[in-house]
Image (cartoon, rainbow, N blue to C red; front, side, top):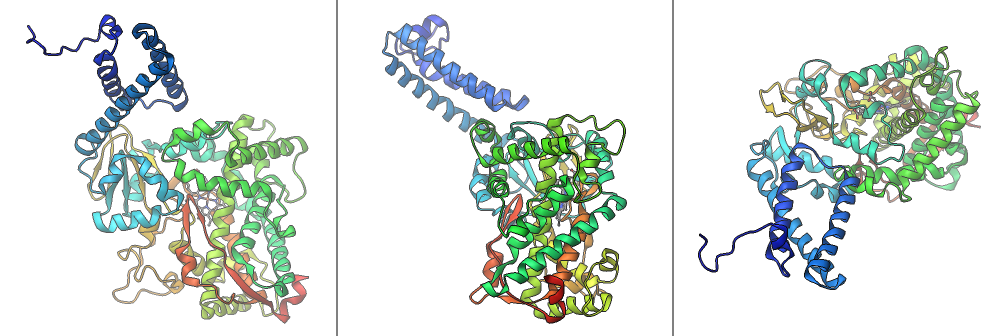
Length: 575
Ligand code: HEM
């Protein structure tokens, strides 16, 4: 029998109806929080139904208290508010204790605050600091570190095949939660090639894309790429008297125009107009949100129905694709990427729904534009910074094509210009346009890394490209731009581990557009160095530029103002 004055917890409806009931105010929210915490171990709630249930429960509780305790509606709401505070405090405390001391990843090293919640990454991700932070943590804690409640980051090139390879446990991995978020944050809500969760579904979907990126298909894109490079040179040349040009902007306009034309036969005319199109402004605003809100996906799926840049960009994609489907291909290229995706060349067409196709269209623009344009802009930045390399590129192009002749042959650029290729690879090594890890969910049985580290099942794991590519164990003098390391034989004591170069991803999900990207980058760099003398604008701080580079899933960078002067021998080519 309970001792006198000892409080016995009674959760019966009768006890809860007693005005001021401690059970209702404290024990119910505590129990609800603990049950919820237990439940989410098995199944994460979807944000919208969860939010709706929470609102409904609050309304029902307010009514119950008002009715049973005879309180005014505002006083009842006040009690419910208190209950919410108890509920949230219990939930957070329970989660913190579990994540710190009982979680299956508790033995992995890493900063304590990252173990607690993904919320702590929102601010650093808004500032694009993730690669720099994780690089520091890898140096401090080791090659496998805990970077989230159920998340690990790996800085070991040998792990690439174990995580992203085509066989073994890697083939049973699924894409991580960030990819689900990219789907849930859109109104269409359809998956594209990149967000297809299982590797087997991805493989069958990728077959459709493969045709659009075969060597034969790429040959069909070459003339268009050259036309766009020439137009860019002419437009820059026309503006040389107006003062410095921003190389970053011109490369970006070029990249988007090419991708619009190769993709759907409709460019953005940004190079022609010399200004950013409205829809690309939206995309630029949207991507800044993508990385940060990917930490807390429920927020984005709550706001996706309100006007926001991602939604407006998506609406533009849907509209453009409708026009593309209705009007067919234009004369930009004989067969654009969508000719293949829509199956126009085959009698039966493509079984994908329109929603899936518009998701593919969004992927093509996002994956194919900013990536290569950032890479070519950063390569040009290093060439302008190092005039001796700039001259070397020029000499190499002159030797391959002849002085005064346009660099217009993609085979020659690939085979006879090793220094250009080395400069591109070195820029991609230092500043991979997709710098942070590509998430995978480990299969239920987990996976084992080559160094013997066992990663339990249902863990989000990724390799950290930026940190691997700047690791002195993989590349000597890793922070310096040294293109010759890609060409010269190694001297004694030097390290060059090409396996650590993962700028295009790895394995079956690696970049499908890599060859198109190299085409664009080689042509742009060769033609720019041929055509212009270039130096940084007075006052431009070249080192501060690097400090300003941010990783928002794609790279966001400060302007690169450059003073250009068209060379006489090439003036006739830029009219
Ligand atoms: C320097 C330029 C580029 C870099 C560094 C780059 C990098 C990457 C990376 C790291 C991935 C893997 C992403 C992931 O698994 O989530 C990827 C995938 C992809 N890239 Fe690229 N990319 C570049 C250019 C391009 C271009 C020009 C195109 C299109 C013409 C393109 C189209 C794609 C597509 C469609 C995927 C998804 C592949 C899949 O999931 O199977 N990329 N890229």
